[in-house]
Length: 455
Image (cartoon, rainbow, N blue to C red; front, side, top):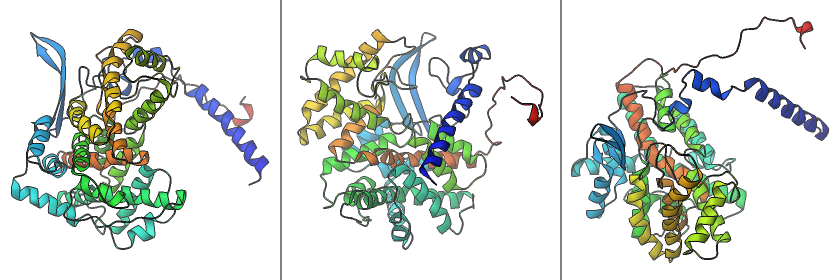
């Protein structure tokens, strides 16, 4: 295609997009008039009740003398407090993600025999099909790891002789395979990108059956395969805290919606990946790290509260960082006083910052965590409290682990596929009609006009 023709078509598309904008605009007051819950949420952020689940529960309010009152957030997996789960495997000095996989999918905490069973199954399924790495991952690798992960998932469909079988035993097998393979697919896709796009040496380390999911990520990613125990423990904790978060989050709801159509596991998980890729969902921790990088360039003293406060005000006024008017990592759709995942993370993050010689940065994060809610309350009309969410600290942890930013969201997916799998199984166990919410048409009816009489 000639350059001038390409330019002309590009201009045409710009003009046509303006037509889309003009004829696609819906007046905001109509949403209020017809009581439409935009984003399936009310003004207070409370989601429209669309289903029932036994997999996880998010608590941000409690009843005090008949009045619904905000409280410190709590998160339960199958009725078990996540903070107790973390304390349990930390006290026992073992890794927790595999235990959480078992809990979410099978609905109970595993005993020792069952814990060994899930570890054995994941280790068994952690091997890619023969030549998959050479014939697919290393062929034309893309720059976006989430797209690469989704592409790999859809390609695995072709390797599965029972890909369309939606019986529970087969779906369980598919889910366990994908949970086991997500770390391998993510890391290998990154290594291929580094080699073919950045001219770096290619490292392909095969996963080890004796290592946990978190250990294998670090083992496969690093050229020398070395990591400290604390590094692996923090990454494992991150996987646990990101594994599940209720049926209403965007990617999990997507899993329910797509599963309700009767489609195969690979299509359902690929759809969830597409949802998680969005910066409003899975990419927030990258924004937090980038925001702090900008902050460190523009403030002189990490301990100067007034200087930090002035920067936060500039963020809200769209005068700093990306000019979006946001303090990334602050606020959540459900939590107000505190996000339990951020609470759990924080104490262990401090230990890693000390090991890495980055305690000053941790103190800056802590200062922003304290000041940001005050600044937001002063500058914005808010309907509920604002607190640090899990993304606030997870990006900092990943940067201390020297994990590349391109893998931040895939690591989220490596964790959250445990929840997606549990919800897919739950949707299949409790089949309903295909999920189909209603949209009200607000366009007036107009007559058809012959083409030669149109404007």
